[in-house]
Length: 254
Image (tube, rainbow, N blue to C red; front, side):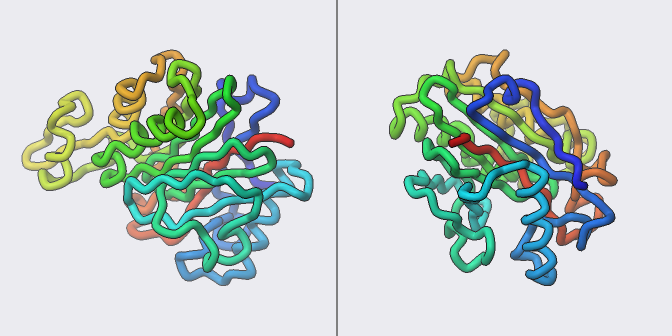
């Protein structure tokens, strides 16, 4: 059975469920859940069905998968219909953040170093899932997602719980000046090492969430670096171009 990583902060709310998947050698492709990276589709669908079983989700729940493009594009899901789960052809196109208030809908993000962020407003019962690589982070996708939650659903940022899931840490994420320069307005987010920079994407996203109005104590960091914990999580950089992806997901119960 595949182990799942959870945040205590989100587990306090029975109306919301979430999970972050991990590697498992007993699954095809170590439990990768990506349909877009060239593995045999049948095996990946098997892995996804296993996750549904492990989650204990009754039939009738719908999973939403986006075709992530490192953009700041946000999609509000208003229908309870699976997208991109059985076939990548009907995934949400060109999108890196998903928001919904639909019960029985599970939003998913696939990563292997980029920052997955899960948001939940228990007052309005609204959820979001964000994919923030360096490009999305530099475009403040987390900040913009909170703004969209306010605009569409009237969310108060002070009510929103944020969970920043495992991603590459500043300990391992070495970038050149062309990437680091996008973060020079927040010097706390990097350390310079010669002509290279050690970039802290989780911290950068935390700052954007704070600037969006979230309260510090409502932002929960996993503190897990995917490159350091490559036995448990896929790391594109550590594995020098792995094709596997783990999935961070959040849903509202019926």
